[in-house]
Image (cartoon, rainbow, N blue to C red; front, side):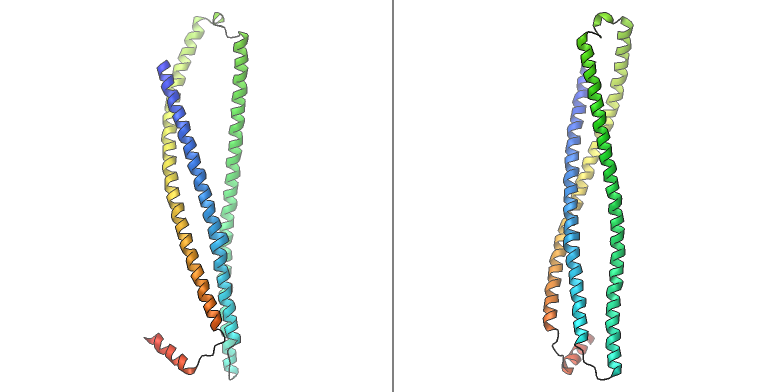
Length: 241
């Protein structure tokens, strides 16, 4: 049985090494995901929101600079301005709803993290109790309580039978753990690929948002420039083309 126990010990220690690697991969992915979250929410989301406010603020300035010749024109400009405000409010209401749903998911996620931490705390307590129990066993061994002279043949046979049964069970559990940790490593690899892909998309979208902001600045510089009838007619012809 010595050979079998040594083989089992090697497999268990190897599993522990793989488990540590899996945990490291998971933590690395978690930090990458959190980095993406900060870049998307604190960065791109706020930039997009600011651009939106700038666009509609500029539109308000455009309406304020519009000239009208009669009451009908004035009512049209006012209605168009109100339509613009309602569009912005409607979009903001929709954004608020979606952000609320995200907040709810994050609350649930935090609850899950708290539960995981409590399980880790319980695991540490079990390890402490196991250590204390076996420390007591060491003291008993040192005191001679389990001296071979105090053990009969029946006790030896029972212990050997128990060891054989325990060995078979542990081999099965070790094999199951090995497959589980391999699956976790595979999932972590896939998660990392997804997180890296998201990171690239976030960077690309940031560049688009910066370009959007440049266009907004260019537009604001043109606010107040009067358009002639020729410009209006040319614009209509270009639209038809």
